[in-house]
Length: 385
Image (cartoon, rainbow, N blue to C red; front, side, top):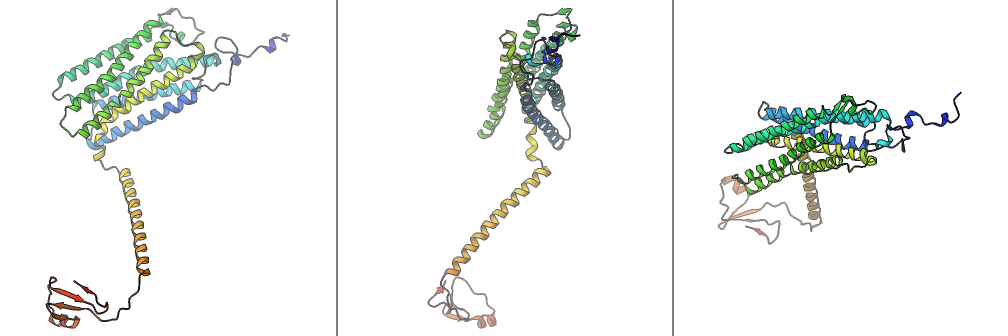
């Protein structure tokens, strides 16, 4: 017979992954916030890429390499979002101390699979943007073309090296996320952290350089000052990605230096993944905007009907306003003094000769208007010249 003390022991579901009682088993965490924010931005990405392909097809009838690369970037983005959604289903966003062993293992497994797709997405989206900028600004600037190619090659090499380190840091690989598996080999975590930070710094420099160089090119173009300023402001919006990328680097540095407390790791991890998805979304959206230029020259049925509806609405409002003013004018006329006007026709006086309706009908003449005076006896003492 079991002792009475054994019946008071907490069940497995009441213990966290360290075998200790969970302080707050019902903690909601930041999972819902993560899903709402990230899916909002991912949805905007889908709309931007869909519009890009629609405009390309309508304006040119074909697609270029940068379009397919951006579509690949969107596919990688959707994979990342799907993995993050599944992690949230297992409790991502909670504090680690409130996770069961199964939750902890599943969340870390999806985090591990998320990272390689995220690294690849950063490179693919920016290569697509670089190719588009080369097509726009390479005329007379061959150095810009080769500089872009060299920088993209450098980022790609670092990304491949990072993926190699990432999948080699633990043996067996399951030990990366499953704390119940004993690792036979474990690489220093600083190696992967430093290579990852190198890639993030290269991406940050890219976001800055590939804004300021096009701005410099646009400023030298022969166009109206207003158009120049508009294009420069549009390009400068891409600096938002540089700011978000800086936030990612800051969080990663804090983790590398061990400044994130265990009690805060779950919440800070949720913030980091929100920032990652938002940054990747902005890159895709901003990369699609230059390709949407011809959309203003297309006749899109839905927008045409919307424009017609707006025009009809405006016309009806103007018509109602006009009718209202005419009604007001008629009321004013009705309020005026009524005149007693007999049924006697007016008389025309041309150089002293009087013409009435009968004489005009018999003569069938065309009278000059510069020497004719109309006298109407129905209105006393009134002559109209």
